Length: 570
Image 1 (cartoon, rainbow, N blue to C red):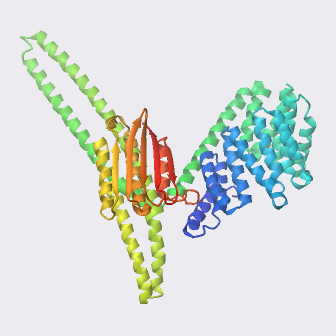
Image 2: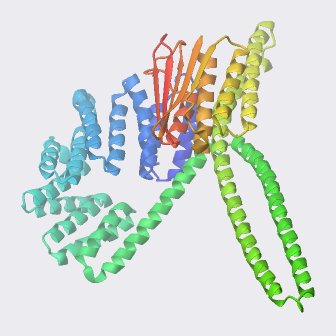
Image 3: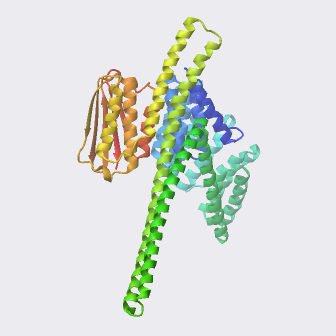
């Protein structure tokens, strides 16, 4: 990370996370998650960065790691700021500020002025310059800040300078000259760039384009040398205003740099995704999908062959009819002309139909590919995070047989053989899922859910109650929504079967305006949602719901059962 080798850093943190998850105490997990969140933020994947920071925050709060909790709040606020959610960003910056204030001398002394600088920056973006001045001055009021943390000092000074001349119309030149001298003395690129940029913007504000252009040119060169490309984008936009004669050149440079950065960000996100999901199991799954793809190609070739055969049959039929018309050419010239015209029209119509068939085949292929990709992701998650994890644990526990073969050890190992039978059943269920027919009607969905009821009742005695609104027109509902709805209900019932110890399960599906409302309720043992770690089942159900743009709500408590409510837009 210190060398800015982001891809390699993310890879090793991901490996560390997987190792930590295998251990009971989950060592270093909060630190791992914070580092991953920071890497995601650096590559502008703000949504994933926020989610990962919240996971770290949950651990930090439970273990009372105040320094980590402070950092979590800062990262969450940073992601909100980048998405222009200013009020929420201030809320989380202030939460970090409260931690720093409460910890007092036991905490990093630069945390307080740093928090004030973040808050001042947000107010400045909102053009609330008076508040920006107030918080910048609070940060600068800390004793020995200039000597203890010169970088934070310069940052606060630059924020203060901009707020002063934009709100009070007073000169702030001395402030910027001071921070520029500090940056030059330290030979620290970010401070030099920030000060040169602020001076350029300052002179541009007072319409002194000559000085503005001078400082902005220096800032651009320094930003490029130090790879501060976000700052370089800002500077290029200001150079368009300060140097209109070369405005087109700077506009082109801005577009080129912005496009390059976006391409790098997309490539990095793809690499991060591959790091998370590409395993040997996924490769095996890909091979299986390729076999299915070849089968689909064979079917496609048969359809095309049938279409060509039909076309040739029609062609020879028309040709034969034309030959007959030529025999009567001497007697029925007018009739011959009409037949020829009809033949041409029919050929054109056939060509139009062939084009429509081809377009339908392409559309069908796209839908097949989309479904395959979604199913591949689900299967890879279930194989890797579920079954492979269990098998790895069993392998490690059976390894003791190399050292001990006494009856007591063998008896303990037989329990792991039983666990392998459970894994065998999981694989059977997964195989069964792969061979399911398309769910397209109310009867289809209802019958598949009832089949799951029967499977559970083969080894448990649970009373099931299924209610589906008869007014739902399933043929008008998107296929992917129906498939994911079934997968979510399937996952919920499997969780109930494994963990809930329930006696009664109620499922209702209804439609209200443009949304499906689903409720899955059991009277089992429930769990404490505040301390219960989210399992793969709940995570998968939540991910499916969010991919459909819906809402996923869990209501549960110990010994009070569990209710899962879904709202899926249709």
